[in-house]
Image (tube, rainbow, N blue to C red; front, top):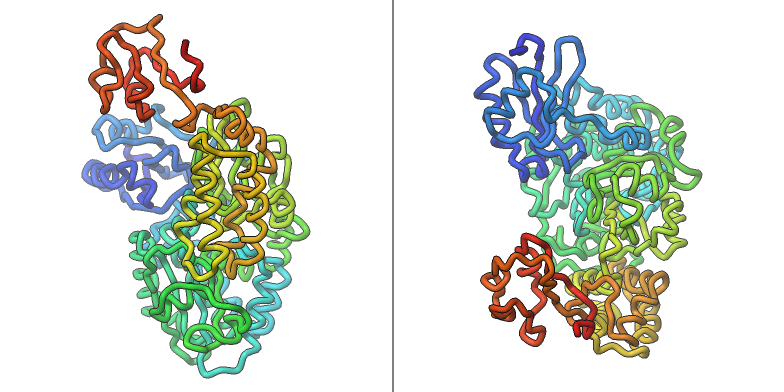
Length: 574
C-alpha cells in the first residue's frame, strides 16, 4: 500500500452523494484508513460520478475516484492509489466552466468554521466593515450582480431601497424555498458552503442596516438546514453577528414546500404564520414587509455571490459575463444527458456549450431544453447557439429562472412535456387569482384531452388565446409564467400538437392513448416473462398482446430480455 503518500481523504456527503451511498463509503474509509484523516465534504457538482472520493497527497496533488462502493475492494484500490475508477473532469467541461461561487464546495468540511476561514472566508465581511454601508451598496451596484432567483432585478438597487428606510426594525430574508423540479443549486450551496451564504447575508445586513435575518428554507432540505444551524451557532460563538454594536438574530423558518411561497409576498405571509398567498404591490416589501417592517429578499445564490464581490472587488466580478448579465451562473442539469449535476459557467455561455460540452448530451438525440423550471420555456435544439443570460432567453419565450435546466430527448413528446409541467403548476396555484386558479386548470384539462387523442384544432386556438390572458391577469410570477411551457411548445412544435389532434398520432410514441403495444416474434425466445409480468393479463400464451386490455404500462417492454416488445402507432398493427 501507498498510505504514506496520502495526506487526507475527502468523501462527498452532500445529498447527492448520500443518495448514492457515500455515508457507508465514509464510514468504511474511516475504519480502514488508520491514521489518515478522512472527512466529509459537500458536492463537487459531478452528481453522475457519486459517491466521489478525493485523495490528497503529500506533494499537493489530488486524485479523484468515482462511483465508489462501500466494499473492501474499492477501498483497497483507493488506499493503494490504484488506477481503477479514477475520475477526471471531462476536458470539454473544464474548458467551459468557471468555478467562482462553488470554489469551496466539495473542498471543505461544511461544518468546520476553520475550514471556511482558512480559505478566505469572512474576508469579504471584514472588508465591508472597513467601508461605509453606502460604499458597500455601491460596490454591489458596480458589480452588476442581478438577483439569481429568476427575476434578475439589480441587487445593489434593491439593497439601496432598504438602506434608505428609517425604521426601528429592518428585515433581511434569504429565499431558500427552491421549488423547481430538477433544481438543486440552492440546496447544494447551503449543504456545501453554508458560511458563504451567511457571510453574504451579514454583508447585506451591514450595508442596509437590517436588524433581523431570516432564512426561509423548505423542510425537504434537512441536511441544508442542519449545516446552516451549525454555521449560525459558530457565527454566534465568534460574534460575527455583532454589527455596529448590535447583535443580529439569524432565524431559520422551515417552509412546507408550497411552490408559490417562492414569490416574495407569499413567502413573507408564510413567514408571519399566515397562508402563503401573494398580495398586490405596492406597497413593495422594502416599504412594508414582514409585520409591516421594511423587508428585503434575495435568494441563496445571490447571497453566495456577495462575499466574492467584496473580497475580489466589483471590477473583477463585472469583468465576467455579458453587458447586461454579469458574473457566473449555477445551473442544475438534468434529463436526457450523460453527465447530470451542478455546473457553474460565465453568463453568456451558450445553451449548446452547456448541454453538449458540459452535460455530455448526444447532439443527435436532443430535441430541446427546458429552462427556468416548470414555468419556463422549451427551447428547440436549433436555437442552442443562444447565449444564456436574462434578456436572450426572454426573447425566446423562456426564462432563466433560478437555474434549472432539463434536457429533452427526441423520444419525448412535447405535448406531453407541456402537460406534465402544467400538471405541476396548476396544482401549485394558491387559488387567489381567477386567471391562475381557473385558467391553468382549463389549460391542463385541454392538454389532457389532446394527449388522450380527443383534442380538436379549436383547442390549440384556445390555448394560444388563454395563455397570454393568464400571464396578464395573474398577480404573481407563478401565474404570469405558468403558460410558458404550452406557449413555447406551440410556438416551436406546433406540428406535434397538430399530429395529436388531426391524425391522433404521437410522433414520439409517448402518449399511451395514441399507441399500441406490439410483440415482434422474430427474435422472441418465448421465455414468457411478459406474460407473467403483465398486471392485466393482456398477453396470451401464444404471445399476442390484446391492446383493448393493455394499459401501456410498459412492464412487459421493460422485462423483455430480447427487447422484442415495442410501442407503435395506434392502428398500425395488421
